Length: 601
Image (cartoon, rainbow, N blue to C red; front, side, top):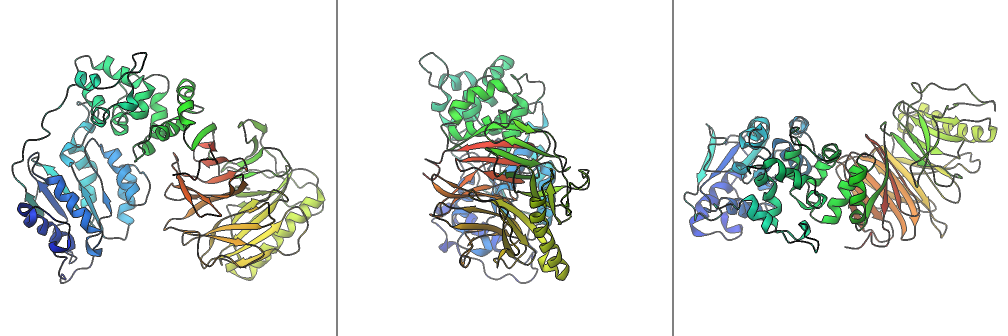
């Protein structure tokens, strides 16, 4: 943050209207936020009783802040009902890191070079879960997260604390809005909340129709009843409540190992919680996320959720939770064949439709230049981070050492010669100049298999794997190193190459013409994987980003859908009938995309 003389801040007249009795408080908040000298307090506390207008003051500030660069708010986290963990997930998402644990969030914020301004309404209402656990007290959130964040010199926060003494101390600016109108002080009991839930024809609670206040409060109130065990167990055993109830309250309750849960709900919920606590309000989307977490873990919950999940535009089909997956590609010539590599170098082939393993660990032969099968290579020495299969017996690998390696599992001189030519071409180019060092490898093609190579200088090279090619089709597409590549051939004979650069740009190059002059997407995050297919809806590109987002791009219209996923994504494969396979730190997962409704809003 720059230290010096403050320039005049924005005047209150340029902000939305504010009640006369709050204008002085509003101007103080504006002056504090616009002070860029680095000499003022980092913390602005908004105090006052219920109904005094505390939250309204912060909402008023947020509504006008976007129009003034010096008052830009980077994150607003409503703290009511949040624990340190769920608060960290929300703040991490808004700052662009994705959901992180408190420790990892603190580390990322400490490395962020931006001067950050955050708003925290309702800190005094923070905390969730059983009352005898630290997570139920707002003081825990303060001690574990807010105070360490405020120790960082480039972060400032405006925080609503009610009449509590939270965060009080020297060097803090405080406004006190005084007495309120007393509204909102009453609170319904567990029995009253349950009674407000509509019932189905057979008498079960219909949580999809329950009032918002019931969904937010009923689990907290169940934890306070005399018959706490039965009330909480009843809610946790009801999949309808898992889909519609407060995700933050459920997350806090399920961290208490003393509470018995059905099946493997605790494990499933833990896997899905970072996404479930985001702003996924629709029941079908919540069901799809929870169902994806339950597949291959909790059969009963999986089957219950499957019909509801299938109503959504994506739903999980199968999962194989084993070793992490570092590389993934469809196998040309093998119907529904999928080649996957884990970080140790083990290669396996799966049926893309069912996830069934078609072959055991491959024993690759690398460098069969004389037409004979080369010695088997121990996985410790070949660790693919990308694969481009030629067929079921041969592929091109991009090793973690940035070397292109031909892989041949049988005596196949033709395959060995073609793959070695590609590896030799790029190896020689890299020796001549560092800008030619290979940084990305992808595959694609339905009529004929292709390998797509990206290099440090931003050039994309497209090779045919179906026939010998002395040199590739090449074009400099990026100003930065290429981080991911793929391609697809369309029904009308086009070959579309997609590539991502280190600058966060995703670009399209139709290989018989010049690349598009502008990126198809530009974000400030790194692309971790690409996959493309020519589907019944036209060409579709899947893009995975380092902040955890997974985007689906309809090539001909430019429409984009964001698929929320449960983990970071390291590898992707996409079939022409809309089956998206994701390789991530937990293994392999297949998701069915409903192409008929994918682009609807």
